Image 1 (tube, rainbow, N blue to C red):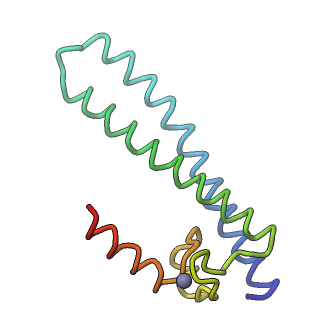
Image 2: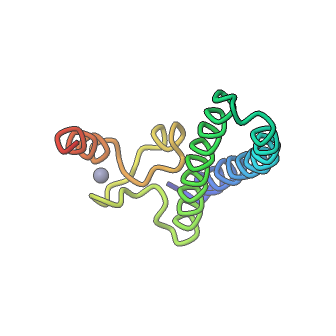
Length: 119
Ligand SMILES: [Zn+2]
């Protein structure tokens, strides 16, 4: 990974972050709207279900925002694109597909197999 690549990924990650922050702002106002409506129609369980889905999406968004921040920090300290498990370079192709990743495909697959065994 050279400086040009790093700048490219910094841009991708920053754009991703901006998009997510816009979206979560929108979700918060939607949530408040839902809450008002929920008080009016407490009997309607579908609204409560929507709220649960929104909350779950929001927690997924905030996890992703944390991952993006961590990736931007790695760009800053020069460790971006290096697998945190084995120390090998992560392929540019993999980073393009998953810019927040901190593991190479081999380590990620090993980890997923392990999780499948343990869960
Ligand atoms: Zn690795």
